[in-house]
Length: 250
Image (cartoon, rainbow, N blue to C red; front, side, top):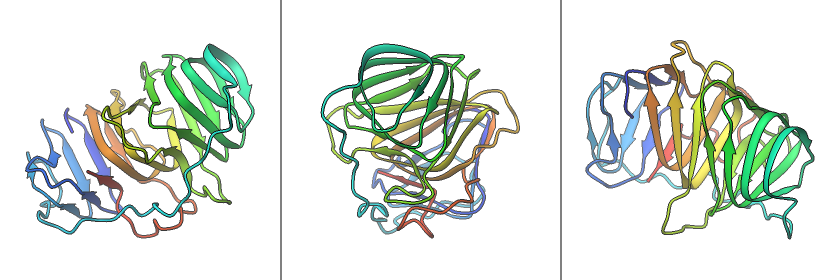
């Protein structure tokens, strides 16, 4: 974490699975607040609400038993710029995809296969009862913080409580999901990215709060001067995440 902001996890803890001497790193005058912070390796920096406990046990992936979505064959949208459209569920996005204007995702699973997704500064992406699946060769980059994102995870079925599901396939180059969050940003559900780097950047909204559930990521970073609350989710959690930590990192 870098910047002057505060990352708050008021109702659960942070688990860092890396055995590195810099497994958890905090740079700047900001704060990291959680009920507990457990690190397999060690940590650097200060500004923690509780002292991180080092040399802690490895925490297994709590969602490993949830089957990974399998995209349908072919591509429905390939190398396209999309704006002011409603996307039916079950569609596959490939190549360079640019979202602008109002994008409505219909209930169900939406697949990104070998896709580099750009979200423009003015885009508004909404979807209820949706799961976004990104494979190991797909990345999402949000350009700026003036747009809006309002997504809610399914409340029933295999992917109950999972808003974003990343592939478990490991590649030499770690793909990234980069999001610039603001007061109009809400993901109601869990972000599960076992082989992605989740990058979050906060704008200048000092009382920023996001409706995120649990975050499970290979790597997580936050940069910003705003205060962000990362566990405002009150819906049904995915199976296996009843008492899990907010972030699982390695």
